[in-house]
Image (cartoon, rainbow, N blue to C red; front, side, top):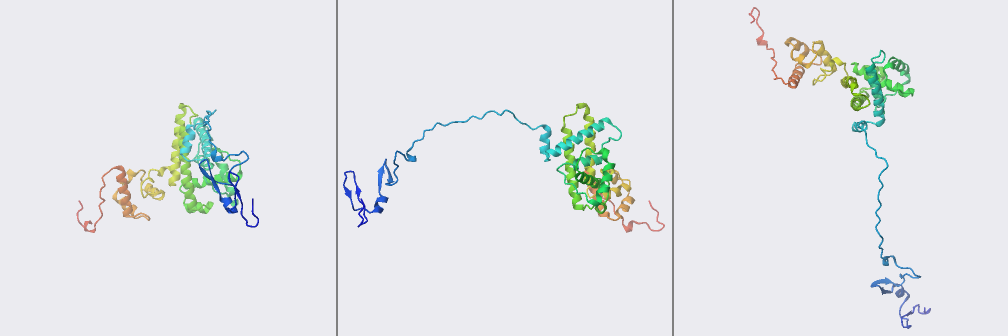
Length: 335
């Protein structure tokens, strides 16, 4: 009971006696032993409920079995190689379709159905992995004319006009570069800066290499068609090196030399040099003439010759320098 005057509560024990000395706060904090555990007097379950920590769970462990998959998937050789090349699957499919058309053209040898360099570059430029140029309104007529002139060699079909003209522009720029057109002339004609041009050169080199690898692994053709595939691979290799160095095919043997680009390679060709070995056979007079040209010099010529000797595995021979005191006097007999 509660004493309203004193504010104390009375607690009844098990014998029925009442303890009137405890307060209301004492009643709230009162505890007792239940199953060896001290619990609050007001925390005991009632109305037939039990505490959750008093329950003993002996549930059986159920192991779910995984059903075998109805279908399994495995990458093909073509898909695996495309993944290794880090190209988009759509790019791989586009290249495969165009390259198969190219092999059929090589096999049939029909007039007007030749495999052209522009057609191969256009095929690679039409893939999602290539970042094409945007066709300006002032360039549309010229791009339409270029596309019509190269229409028979194109290996891919592009329906959207803007994308088609952009691909034609990209292919045209790379074709001009491989034909040794100067960068400033490309910028003047089509508005492509050297930095943008270099970016597309690297992309095209990567995609042409991917095309070569994909056509080599494509198993749709028979073994008797292998010579056709080899011919196409060789064409792609030459085109890729031409775009990499920006030169025609006749300079590819020279641009591989260190410190020799397409401009210097063309100068060497004017001296009758067709291969690196020919450079070692130049006369002393030709070497002096070459050294006197703008952009060359004796040190550069000697450095190029030394690099060629090292590559060819020959012993370096010191080039004799002319001395003033070796020049004969007037009337002196020359041995």
